[in-house]
Structure formats: structure tokens, C-alpha cells
Length: 254
Length: 262
Image (cartoon, rainbow over all chains, first blue to last red; front, side):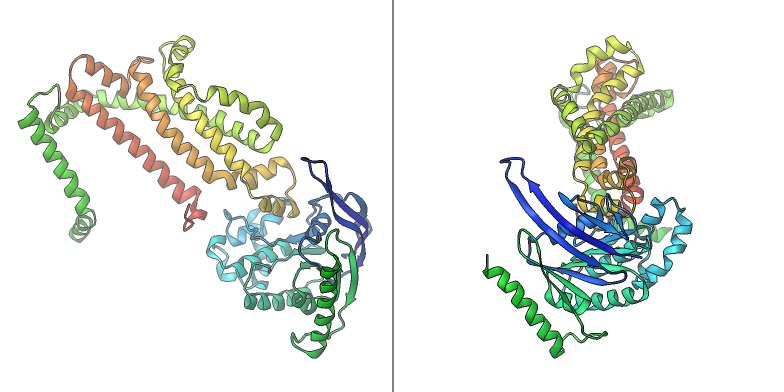
């Protein structure tokens, strides 16, 4: 079960130097159904990463509440896995030991944990790289391993902060396909932050479009394209066009 | 066997030739130009002295004494420096409290501590170890501290969302391995400084015995061939310690950094 509910969440950053305040998020409201794939889309600097970090428990909101299955979020928890935009694998651990990290933290022995995560290693197609160190992997493989590491904790929600942002276009497409396969196999709710309209349209059930700073929910768009989706179908293009106009409007009204 | 020998000679040929040339030049200069054992003992003289101290067994006691002094210093510096650096790097208040003290003590040359070393510890091995400790502690503290300050935030965040939230665990599983290259760089610098302090402390007679002590003793006896021998021994031993440490680090501790240009 992974039902996320965001209620009236605001976040203000205060700068120490001149005591000025910067509002990053203003009154965000939306609900995420269990097993849903949600993309949060917005111009850069709109606070979408901040929102995701609050859901992860890495930051706190100034006001409002976020609940997971009705329970308020107060701090990080293995139930909410996260994949970061930057390469976040621990460089001193091999691929397999990165993936077992979460289980080890829960007190499982290394041998047992290694057996457990074998299926995730397989799921992301990194079996023959299990004993490689992160620096020996390409960017795409590192993000795959990071996804496996997050999945190994069997989270209810997977938070993804532009995980494919640093990858080239083709690798990105391949990983999007693989991610959808994982989503279909595992019963996990996805919250996926991106600035790419294409990515949002291809992946999500619903797209939360945000305004530029301070970030507010501009519109929530339901993507009713049948899966598996065709990236270049006329329907997809029409939707893309609509979202791009929304974002453009956002740019010009400021 | 023969093939391997030939291969080694081929690989190390230039180095070997260069070394032999220097020795020949040295022997020639000492024997035919300087012609004074006090100014420049020849290679032959030094080898002769080496055989003498091997035969009398002095070399073993000197080596052991020096290594003991060095060991006392390095172990003390580890046990004080690394935890202090960790605490300073992890807790901001600790660094604010400790930093001014370190900044005052650090510019004092370690050798200036020799009088206090003698007063506090007497003419003992601990006194010599203390001087080594003073020389080693600051590079270790500062590099540990820097390493901890530079732990990438994304690694800490990633660990937290994976269920590693306590400070102790974060230090143990994330910050320490992440800071290890910096800590090790600090230890290498510290070993260089510590080695110098060791010789100086022994020359000052902080403790009886040791390579530095024997070097100074032989100087007073005007046995410059022995002085030169001890100089070479000190250099050689320093080199061996550094190489052994680097070998251990590269093959065991920092294997994950292989291929990364630092």
C-alpha cells in the first residue's frame, strides 16, 4: 500500500544573511493513489525537488502535512525509497553491496542480504556487474543500480528526482521502458520529478504541472493514453502540445 | 628463472645503470679527489661500516628502537587525531570549539616540544614517541576533518532514505569510507613529518638509542662513514615504510578508487 496525500504544503526558505524569505512551495495539494505513477513537472527552480525531498523526509515543510497511508511523514524511512539525479551509489561499495545496503541497515547479515537482492540485480540487468565498483559502470548502469538499491528495501513509494536527467537521450528512453516494466511487476507507487514533458507524457498516469516560483499546482492532467505507449502517436503529441503551452504561458505571465 | 632475470634487467635496466653510475662516481670522488674520510667517506667505507654494525648487532637495536619510537607516535596520533577529526567534521559546534586551539598549537614546530617531552616523560621511549606524535597529529586531524566536511550530501541523503539515520551509523558506513582517501593522504604526510621529528628527537638525546641517536653519537666520534651510513639507513627505512603503507592502501583500502585520477 502506498497512498500519498499532500495537504496544504508550503515551504519557505529564510536566508541568514539578509533575513529575506524565499517561498519555494505554496499550498500544494494532491493525492496519489496506491500503485499510481505520478510525474511532477515544472520549470526549473519551481520547488519540485524540494517537494520530493519533503516526501522523502529529508526536509520539512513550513506548514501543511504529507501522509503515507494516513500516517504523517516526519523523517526518512525505508518505506519511501528514493533515486537521485546525481549518481548516488556509494563508490566504496561494489554494485551488489550497494544494493544490500538497505537490508544491512535493517540488521540482515551480508550473506543473507546478497541472496535476497539477487532478483533485483536481475531485474535491472546488472548480473554480470555485481562485483564491479560504481566508477566502472556507465551513467545508465549506475542509475539502474540505484533503482535496484531503492527497490531492495521493498518500498511502498518510490521517489525519483530526475533520475535520468544526466543521461543521453537514447539511454534515457531505454531506462524509461525498463522503469515501466518494473512498475508493472512491482506494486509500487511512483512519484517522479522531471522537467521533460516527453518523459512525463510517456510515463505517468497523471501529471502534476507546477508553476514557477513559488511552486503551486497549476493543473493536474490525467494521461489517458493506452499502455504500452507510443512516443510519437498523434494523441501523445496533442497532449505534449497542451502541456508545453501551459508551461509557456507560465513563463510569459511572470 | 633466467628469462625472468633478463626481463627484470630489461625493465629496470636504466634505473640500475643510473644507480651503479652514481655509486662509481661517488667512490671515485671520495677515493681520488676528496681523499679525506671526514669530508666524504667512500662507498666502500660505508659498506664496511654497515658490515661492522651488522656484525655487532647494533643495527638491530637501533632499528628496533627507532621503530618503537615511531610506533608509539603513530599509534597515539591515530587514536587522538582520527576521532578528533571525525568529531570536528561531523559536529559543527565541536569544530568551532576545537579549531582555535588547533590553530594556536599547529604553527609551533614539533621540535620546540622537545624540552617538555623530556620534562614530562624523562629520557624515555615515550618522550621520543611524544615528539613524533606532535609532528603527526595535525596533518591527521586536518585531513580527517576535511574528508568529513567533504562527504557528498547525496551519499548521506541516500543512506538516510535507505534506513541509515543515526549519526553513529552514518559516520561508520558513509562518512568514514567516503573520507578515507583524505585521511590516508593525511597519514602519509604525517609519516613524513613524523620521521623527521623522530630523528631530531633522537639526536637531541630524548631517549638513548635509535638511528638518530647513533648518527649523532658517531658524529661526535668523528666517524663520518657511520654518520653517512645512518643517513642512508634513515632514508631507506622511510622509503620502505611509505611503500609498504601505499601498497597496503592501494590493494586493500582504496581498491574502489582504482582508475580514478586523484
